[in-house]
Length: 341
Image 1: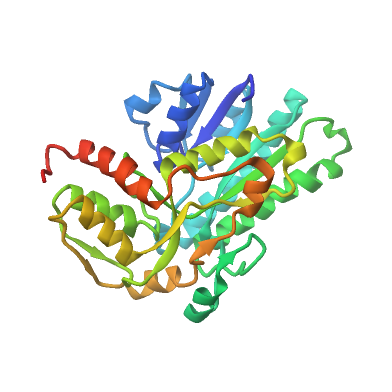
Image 2 (image 1 turned 90 degrees about the horizontal axis):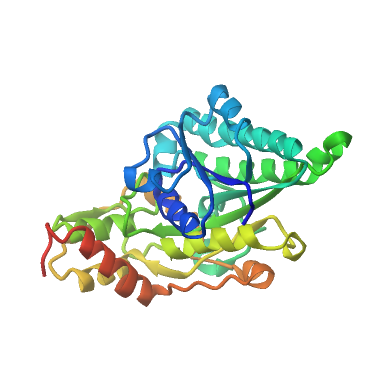
C-alpha cells in the first residue's frame, strides 16, 4: 500500500463500505468522496470525507490539495438506474471518470510518481447475441463478446478504454510527464452479494434482493426467469480482489483489465439457497422483459485465468461458503429483530 493517502470515490456504495473497512484494518489513510453523506460508522475510518458530485470542478480542485497515491474509483450510476436515465448515467460514469483520470494524472505529475488507479468494471461490458450463444459460450475471456447492450455496460467498456489511453499513450503525448503517469487497473466483477448493504440498482440485484427480503419475512417477486444463470461473488472476495490487484507489482501484470469470479448459479438455485436459509421465504418469478433481455446477454461464466496467473487470484468464498457462512450469519444478525426461524 502507498504511504500517501488512498482516495475512494463513491464511498457510500456497496463496495465502498467494505473496502473502507478493509483499508482501515491495514492502517491506510483514507480520503473518501461521495455525493451522499457517509454513514457515521464508515466515516470514522476516514481521515477526511469530501461531499460532492464527481462532476463538480470544485471537488477536483479540492482533491489536488490532498496528497493521494492510489485511487479506487467506485462512483457510478448502476445498470437499472442507468437505463432510466441514460444521459445522466453517461455524464456520471464517463465524464466523471474522465475528470478523475485527469485529476489523478495531475496529482501524479505533482508527486513525480505514478498513481495506481483501480477501476471496478462489470460483466455488463459483455453482450452475447442470443440466449443460445450464451449457453454455448462457456467461460468468456476478457477479449470476447464486447458488445454491451446497456448504457451502463457501454459506459464501463469505454471507461476501460479511457484508462488504457491514460496508461499507455498520455505520457507519450507529454514528454515532460516524467514519472507522473497513471497505472490503470480494472476488474470486471460479476454479480456481487453483500450481507451488510442493501442492493442499489444493479440488474444482478435479484440475488441479494431475494435474501434481504426473505430475512425480513417479506415476499419477493424475482424479475428474471428461474433458469437465468450468471456468475456471482461474495463482497469479501470482491474487496480482496481489488486489494490484491492494487498491491500487484507492475511487472507481474500482463494486461490492464481482468475478469474475476467465484461461482455461477441460476436464479432458481439462488432461490433454493435462500429457502434453505429462511424456510418461510416466499419467492415467485415474474420476469421483467427489459431486465431479462439485459441479463440474457451476460455470460453464464467468466474466464478469470489471467488474474489467477498474474496476481494469484483465488476466490475464498465458493457458493456453499458464500451462503452458509457469509450471508446466513450476517443477514440473520442484521434482521434478527424482524425474522425468526
